Image (cartoon, rainbow, N blue to C red; front, side):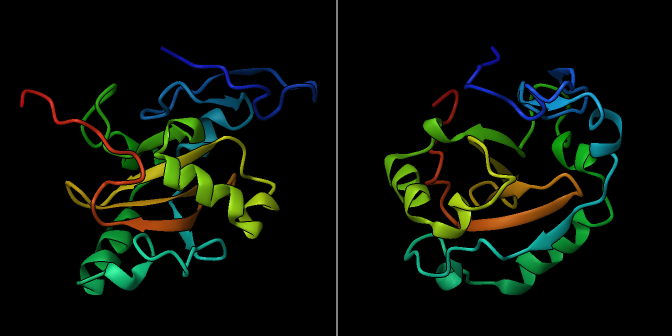
Length: 166
């Protein structure tokens, strides 16, 4: 079910806003002008918002940098839509998550990050990018397809989930 958390991008600016057609959007709203072109962009990477100081979610716990870099490199040959539809519609590994659904530690840390508070592309959601069954990169996807990385989450702690059928 789609949640409405205040104004979405484009509201109040004379742009029609609707649910995106791109796979893996988890009901996130983007404006009509983005729909087709946005999901056809290949991703780029930025670390301007990266939280180098966090003990658990910085690269301090990265055991194999080459594996991470190879994964990011492989994503560069895909579109954002491809990246979000690896398992098919409704069952994606990479997707948006509203900030109010993150763990308490992540919500607190977001409020402390000055660069994130000043970032015009940050609204009320982050993108969780699948790396492995447990590992995720968390960040913001900009309109030009740049993924601004905030955290490396090696143990799926930012947004903990309960495994099905256990």
